[in-house]
Image 1 (cartoon, helix red, strand yellow):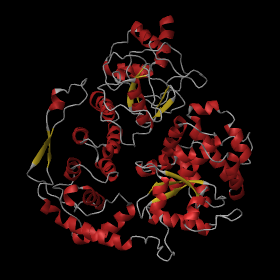
Image 2 (image 1 turned 90 degrees about the vertical axis):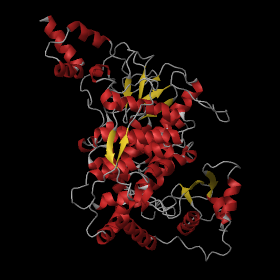
Image 3 (image 1 turned 90 degrees about the horizontal axis):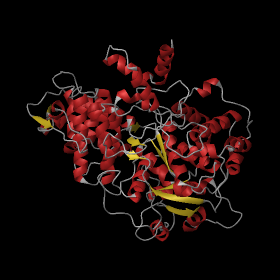
Image 4 (image 1 turned 180 degrees about the horizontal axis):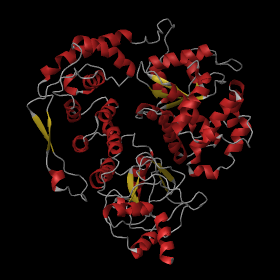
Length: 624
């Protein structure tokens, strides 16, 4: 009877372990071994734990058999890439097992000293791991973050353990920024890729997610050797797992340039089928294949509207669509891991062959002709740039920028509406208003000169003052800012004001959190990051926002905004340090504190929250 009770207890605690064992052996598990696994469970950081530490969500470990060592936290709910899901059992306190190599994926968070690293997509350990992995973030090693004016190291390191404390600080800061900024040294992206190699080659887990994260990194690499290595790895991996057509096409849509090997894989699915190449595939190939583009062709990101314009042109000139024949020539793809701790199996080390569709470019002439016609049509349909030729003595915007920008720097510029008003010869004397007409002139002038003004000057009901600080960020002429980005920018600004944010470690996770709600593009993320100097510290308190939000929004709309802000903050340690946030929001948004979310609201996903709030707050951006 005692053994039965122990067996049930252990089965609950390490269910994933038992399921794995049941698949691999018909013998009952050894009781002593299971108890040893239970004793080795790592320490769990609970919601009420005030001690600093690391926070991770349920994630598969470096081997599925070690699933019993996964840690749980409501701060970072399990993501879609986790095959284990969320545990429904109470959290357990147990002695930390420092020798376990753990994985923290796209929905995980590592809290390390003074920095929060959301979705690091990396391995970590609480001490030196017995599984040798150069990229493993040992949370016990010292970290030093760079200070303003401090000289940054020009050399690199071959492992996280061998990094200096300052190098670790630079690496963790880069990870915390979601890897959307060009890394300082080649060793940092190389280190991160070591972990991706282990995750995909050794663990054989999270393959589509890891490929997607590598796609995002590719445009940031300025080292040709590392870029070529990454392209080779992505292509080899895509062939090995043979991604479904829709997944591969989805990845290719995100890029402005796609390696030929990946396009070969995509085209191979349609070769010799005698079926016309789908318009979406033809559009992606014409848009991203370097060998098919002329040097002066503009870079065209994927757009469903552009695809609709391209489709009839393509079907007309290609007589219903191109029919691809499999070429005689092939290319061989081999891969040797950069990670020194990984040895490929004999099967994995064998080269794989794929057809070389781009050896004979004459085959693609009808597609190239279709693309040239499309570009001509797109140029004619391009929305006209605001015409400011009728402005007398056009303002010297270039001189204005040179005056604001310190010599030799390229970061965004802080000014005021008064500065911009004086440049454009508006009356900025006390008592005059920054009218909508004046603000539109500001925005139009800036866009013509290739700049974006932050915050959005078109928010209905918001009172703008000549003393308001603004930020000027570079913006390609003709770029249309999406409604999702405009709302995310405002919510980020409002949230920072609600908690009086003044540190990067608070701003960065919040900026990342906006992705969960509004499905932002990489360019949108870069724009959000650029507004940090304007939000840290905030220039207004929540009372400023409450005044015009209460005037323009209904109670239900204000409640939706409040719940989104609380949802964005709830996974962060800063939320526990600011228990009064709910009271502050309710006070300035004129809401009752004791009114809880409905059951339907509590079940909403972040994406559903984002869509709902976009509908609720559409009135604020009717002039945007």
